[in-house]
Image (cartoon, rainbow, N blue to C red; front, side):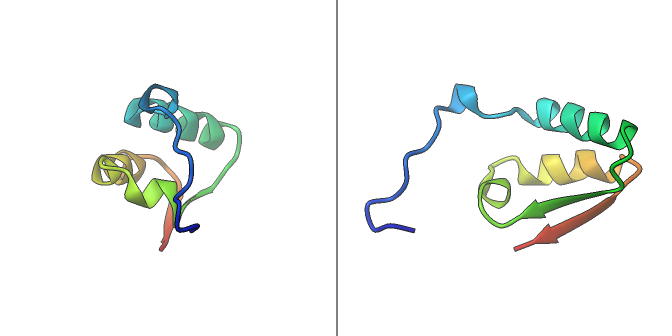
Length: 66
């Protein structure tokens, strides 16, 4: 990361936990079998535990790559 940081999106432009779950459900209903949470934005969310818990109820394989 640059020493000056990177420009961040305003909070209102980020997906909510429920919106992430909705997108994941749409992917799964269209044949996606594995969802990966990779390093970066997904792993620094304050609601990461909530996101992972919601994924755990979906019928897919969840992988976290830190």
